[in-house]
Image (cartoon, rainbow, N blue to C red):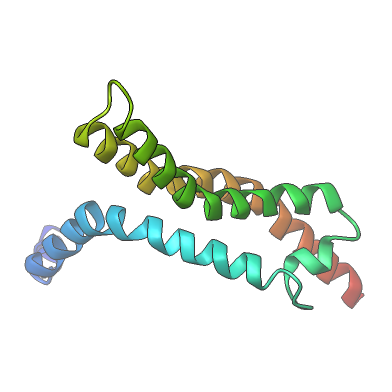
Length: 138
């Protein structure tokens, strides 16, 4: 048993594992907000496609679909509003470059939080879509 564990332990590529850890801890948090922002733009522009979950469930659950879509709209608006707030706060009495950069950094990472809330709500929307597809096949 111990020999099998040692053989598996020797097969591990420690360099690749360390590189992956660094990517997940350092690079991903800085690239993920932009990816979420771009996905929200795609969701908003493709909302009326026939095979989209929004179109398929909008007749049965209009309020719920609207609520999920609101998160995409908020994510879309967060960057322009954040830049305006950062400029306004930098020019205020207590403002300065530090306040400007602080507001921009909060604005940059805000889509992460909104997307997390949207994805929790969207899980049940996906279940509803799956159940509707299963019911229509019978």
